[in-house]
Length: 535
Image (cartoon, rainbow, N blue to C red):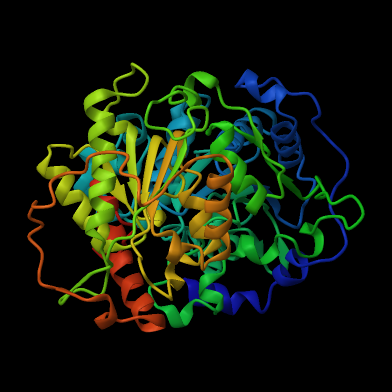
């Protein structure tokens, strides 16, 4: 399907329209006043602007871009927009595409709160039939896993899809609709959620296959995501500088129609809206990524009940500042049979924080394991931390990579950066990965790492400076917490010394491959199923 999309791209007007320099859309508004499904939308200027313009198709034939930085309510905005289309445009059908099953299920579940189930259809790949018990009942009820035998004849299959006004697929299964019995112009809108983390060609499959007929664009396209967060997962380092690593969203934002006005420094609301109100994080946690990646335009609007309860914790170097950078000059190690790296000293320090939080709580508040998340960019460190947590019966604390945590949040996040005493740490020198890592926490963020290594990287140097300026650094000479016994056994193979490990592009490529394999296993842990059509 991707190859066919690329072939058809040459004959379509997509490139000319998507990368136009002048506005040719529709400025008239058929619908101006709205009765909101969620009343809180009415007070959010950017959400109202985006929904109004999406419903009125002001960008058509160009896509409308919903630029959603972390915690700004992108999914809520999409759900409200689809609900308003359903209510105000009774002849319009909507195709919503997400990059993963979990994202598609979340959209489906939220849409079912405002749209009757008879008008919603969620398509699953055949492979998901094995995990029916793990899918929420409300989502399962409106899906093909509930309605039909997976092997049903395609003609009969699509006869049952047609009456549904809102249809949800993943990017990898949306190709099923291309060349099906669905008539031309059936879908008036195509939404692509998390477009920033999808390969460009994956986004083009539903756009060209369903939203374009002949040389005309027939559906309003909505691209939602954040080009400042992680893009497509690429397993090989040599592909990082090719089009495989760039999403359609990243390619068009800040270019042509989607560039900021040079005089005002603002986007054209007829074609793009950047959400600004962050409903996730304590202002302290938002400040650094906001300045570093979003030009200081985000506003901390989360409820203090959600974000301020760790303020005053006796383990904070600055009691009013719920952020810690804990300096640990450990040793980067590598097993003989693995390309990835780990750091036992950092793992011990992370575990000591977890132990303190679980056993003593924070400011009189006991903390559930499920409220804690741990990030590390290296697969071996993730495995080490999981093993150590499992031995302490803390298996409900989720440990994963930055890629696995994108789009998610936790009240408390800890991060182990792993690399120590190293002159090269290119895998950590990724602005998008840093952005995602530092924007998952709601109330408390703890980063454990070697400042000597991290300060070779611009963004990490700025982050450590931010922590130092606010008295939030625990230096390596200070032992804040008693760590677990250093005699604990890790059941590891004989490690190599840092100077014996691979480094540079070869190492980063190998670690990326292992990282991707680990991410697939992580998705299984989270009751998600792979978008495979092969079985």
